[in-house]
Structures are given as C-alpha cells and as structure tokens.
Length: 147
Image (cartoon, rainbow, N blue to C red; front, side, top):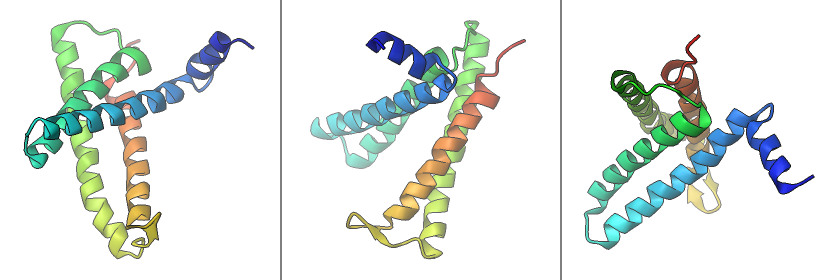
C-alpha cells in the first residue's frame, strides 16, 4: 500500500471526517500555543495573549473545519457569516462548559494527580467532552449539508 493510498483511506475513507477533525484539531492546538508564545515573547501580557490566542485558534478552526473537515460549499457572505457566528457561539458554549465542568469534576473527587499534575484527570475528561461537543456543534449546527 502506497503512502498516498494510506492517506486517502485514513482521511477520505469510512471515518475520514473524524480523522480530519482530529488531525486539524492537533494543528489547532499548535497554532493556539504558538500564537500565545509568540505574543508573550514580543511583550504582550499573558492574559491578553491567552485571549488573543483563543481568538486565533477559533478563527483557524473555523477555516479548516469549513474547508477541509466538513467541506462546506457556502460562499455567500451572509451564509458564511452565519456559519462563523454559530461556530463561535458553539466554541463559547463549550468553553463555558470546560470552565464550569472542571471544578465540578475536581470537587467530585477526580482531583488526583496524573503525571504529577493535580487535577489532570478532570482536565482530560472535560477536554474530551468539549472536543466531542465541538464536533457535534460543527457537524449538525454549523456546517449542515444543504439538500
């Protein structure tokens, strides 16, 4: 099996959409972390850098999800604006879930240390649920296939 056919099978086969979502999700984390680091290194306050890197990450995620993951064909400015607004709202909702869900899980006893990091198990669980919710928001609310 050639590398090209393996890539085609992984990214365009039965579970291709989910594989593309995970691949671009990893890239999104890299974009967010690099933008945060770059902003801090040029002297921007870490709190502002964090907020800016979140905005950059959401913008990057919107573009790659629209074009490469869900293959949205909308080009009309109004429709793309609606997609962008709905996408951002979904990310805000899941962000609030992550902010609220972590202390709940932590206080319910999932506060054990993992890899020497206190509460990391709660963080992993909240992040996993957040990723799943983001996928469903994007697939079923934002980038709906038009019949």
